[in-house]
Each structure stands twice: as structure tokens, then as C-alpha cells.
Length: 510
Image (cartoon, rainbow, N blue to C red; front, side, top):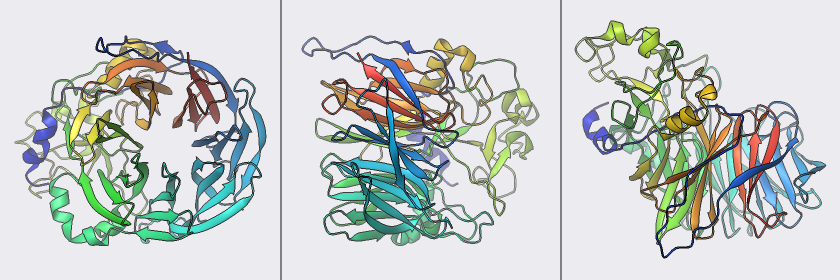
């Protein structure tokens, strides 16, 4: 990477980042801090109940239909979408399933009695489908061919379009690498617009200099991008799509059906105060420290909200590595050759109790191309970040995830320290719910089995409120907020889909 200091300078001004992991108890925290002219709205989510969908991979993502009071849960284990009546959330009833003819579902979105499901082909590198079902009869109403490996589908707020992130992953030999694409489906006309990134191939050098990544073997930018998750503006005119492995976000004009921009996300310095991490699972202690390592944001889920007419997007900076038989970027820092000038203390740094165990990419850090590493990079940023709609950082949570979980749930911090050498708590899922005059953010921590709750009404100064968990829930993959007006209980609900335990749990705002 060239001009690294210039790329990193805006991010070095940040003062917070967080790492975290599992928890078995519900913990409430934080106090309202609002101006005198505002009436605080109660935010106090409490566990209500759980339902068992199946085994591992049976509860990934959920969608809710207010008309039928039904919950639709992506069930990879059974290759269907499992349907539950949650009129009584304390006694949910299995209704049936959506028949996908033996194809694997990845995502579900519900709008006004219609259920859209993203379905991959049996050969992942082939085009996939979005299938639309009636929420009451469970009958198939429409099917649309989209790009390779549709990983996420969402209705726009006005219901006019479905927006699909087609990841386009390579095969395991890294011989076939389909283009990553974004599909826009016109619900009324049934027209599918497939958007690719060919127009950005010529911009690769400039994007990379700002922290974007294009690194697959023999891949153009258009082949290398892997769209992951979609957020849409309230006016249904703009979509933001995370490009996780590439460390960027694509901006899509839904009216003109064009990808208008790629926003490189840059890197985060763990040497900056407030960004400290625990880098080792072999040091027999749980503590945060400054280390000469950069985090790659690499967000998974993304959510949109607006404050005073300004667009904001919130990302869960999970991180992800490419590790295929035909190509792998993963390496422990102990196994890297470090530049003697940049790291005169390399022998000490590379001990297991220091940085030796930390997972690293081999695709970044050799600035001068001489075969040794002048900089060190770890996957993810162990945080959530609030960005402007044009990709400027407004707030990064620094080490707040790690700090809060270490303070409140030390026994499960970073998976009882087992994940400190990887990506920490792995913030993966985010969703935002408006409660009264407040904007409430929920952040799912995959390795901690926890949900963090923040008030982000002021994007520059989020306030931590609660830490949620339920014993038996493992691997929160999806977080779904149901507004009080649509909820079967008449109160705000939070629905957590847990991929590993195959459970779905309900929390209610009391």
C-alpha cells in the first residue's frame, strides 16, 4: 500500500474501539442523558422466550409479517424457510415451511404479506434466485434469476423494489470467480436489473490507495468484489451495500439503477489510545493493550438511519478472510518475516503471548515489495462505526465492545479469551429501531452470544444502554426489530436468530 499514513490519518483521530465475546446473563446498564426539553423514552429490553427451530444453521435470519403475526426463519439445515405463528411470543407455534426445492436459502425479507427469499444455486458460482411467497398461504408467487450466490435480499421501505447482494464467491480451487453483483427487482413490473462493477475496474489503483482491497488471484475489481449486506434509505432512493472482503461500501442509486460510488473504508490503528485490543489467547490474561497493528473494517451487516435530514449508515465491523484451497491470505503473525527497521523488536512481538497468535493477512503490509512486512493487519475492527452517507467516519466505538464485555462479563470475554487472537467478539449484526424520539442500535456479537444496545440519536455521541443474552443461545446471526405498532404484544420486540444453537429468542421493551 502506498501513502499509508495519508490513508490512515483520518482514522488515527478516533478514540474508541471495542472487542467482546459471550455472556449468559441479561445485563441492563446506562442511564438516559437527554436535554431538559426532551422527554426520555424508556428503553429496557428484557428476555421473554425462545423457540427451537432445529440444529446448527437452522436459525440464521428472520423476517416478520404483521398481517399474519408470522415469523419466517432461514433454515439452512432443512433447506427451507421455517414459519412460526408468534401471536403469543411465549408459546410460538410451528406453521409450516416455504418449499425451496432443495436449494439453500441465505436471506429473507417481508413486506405487506409477501415474503422474499434469496436462494443460491446448487453450484454457488451459477446465478441464484429470489423467490417470493404469500405469507398466509405459503404459496410461491414469483421467482427471479439474479447473480451468483445471493447473500442478502431486502424490500425497500416503499415496497417497490427488492435489492439483492450477490456475493459471487469463487470456487474452492479459485478457478471460477463470478462477478459480484447487485440486483434490483421491480416488484410491480417483475423486471430484474443486474448491476456489476465493470465501470470501476479502471479506478482500482485510486480505490486501493484509500484502503479498498482487490486481491483475488487474477481477478479484476468487478470479479473480486463480494457484496454482502444491504441498507436502504427511508425514501427508497439509495442503497448502501457492504463489500466485506474488499473493505468498502457501494452506493446504489435505485432510481437510475446505477452503482454510483465505492466508498473505501481505510484502516484503524490499534496503537491509538482508545483502540486497544487483547491480541493473544496464549498470555493467560484478559487485558487490552496498544499494539502496532491495523484493523481492516470489513463490515458484515449495515443499517441506515437519518438525523435532521442527514443520512447515516452503521456497520458491524466483523472482518473476514479468504481461505480457499486455491488461495489463502491467512497467516499467524509469528510466521511472518518482519522488516527489521519497522520492527526492531520483532522477536519479542512475535511471541505467542504478544502478537504471534494474531491472525494476519499476507496481502497487506509489504509496502516496498521486498518480501518482508513493514506493517501488520488483522481482520475486522472489533467495533461498530457510524459513517455519513458518503463514507466519512462520524463515530467508531473504538474498544468499547471489549471494555464493556470485559467489565460486565469477564468470564465470556472474547469467548473466554479463545477468540482474542482472531477477531475478538466479532460484531456481525446490526439493526436500528426508532423508539419515541430515540434511535436505538442493536449490535449482535457472534462470538460472545450477546447483543449490545446503544442510543445513537446523536451520531457523534452514542450511549451504551444494555447488554443482552440468554443462556443456550449461541451464534447470533440476525437481529430483527419489530415496532410496537406491528408487534403481537403491543410493545417493541427484538428477535435474535442464533445460527449455532438453532434458537430464536424474543426480547421485549418494558
